[in-house]
Amino acid sequence: MSPRTGRSEAGRTAPLKAILLAAYAMISLAPVLYLVLTAFKLPADTAALPPRFLPGASAPEDSFWFRFTLQNFHRVFADAQTLLYLFNSVFISVCSTLLSVVVGSLAGYGFSRFPFRGGRDALFFVLSTRMLPPLAVAVPISFMYSRLGLLDTRFGLILLYTCFNLSFTTWMMKAFIDEIPTAYEEAAMLDGHTRLEALLRVVLPQAAPGIAATAVFSLISAWNEYAFALTLTSTDAVTMPVRIHAIIGDSGTVPWGPLAAAATLFLLPIVFFGLMMRKHLVRGATFGAVKG
Image (cartoon, one colour):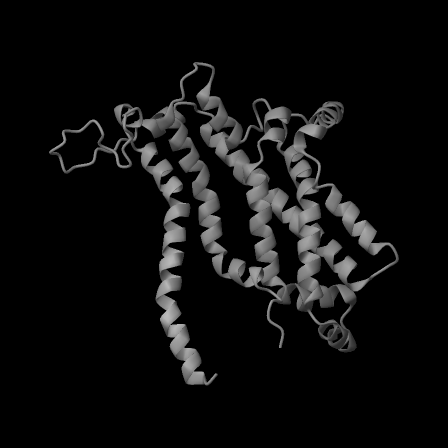
């Protein structure tokens, strides 16, 4: 096939790819958009039948104006502890992500560069810790934390989230470091650098896209965690997932407006972080896919 034929075929398939990507984006983002719009709806709009996608279900039919309200956000912030819960989520997730990425990078480097007998079994053992459902170990961890004084503490959740994310970060970083030639480190050590200096100055900068991708997935995992946060916290270290569930309460009716407002606030930090890391995330997802 000539280069001109290849370009012509690519040009014909480009519109189809764009249409498919646009359709996929619309299907994926429609629930999120509906959630955000519900956060600004009046109570009559959230309970309207049939449901309306845009605010204004209770407006006159000849009205071209959509009526937005902030009262749902006011109800969420009526609890003075909401900002504390949001801070707890940010602080705990960021700290556990940093720790898991740092320790996982070192562990992944060790597994990649220093193979040993039983290394694959050890890697599988590391991964097996991720296979446990949280509720299966919630009771023994609660008993252990009560003895250690870690119940309802940010440090306790940071330590726990780090341990559970460590298996994932270790496997991810080992895969990324495997793609970096050892010749780079050997050249650095020939120039007089130690193994640690070669790791910090040569290997980790080369693996930066992989580190960014691993950090994003680790942060999402810690950010969304609910079972341990519900079991191990009560007041001081409560996170936003627990707060969002508490909005439903025991009334039997779901306050969709405040619930959507709280979920929208919960989405903003992780969306902001994802947008900041989007270039590295794409590069990390394809790291090592093309070999020269």
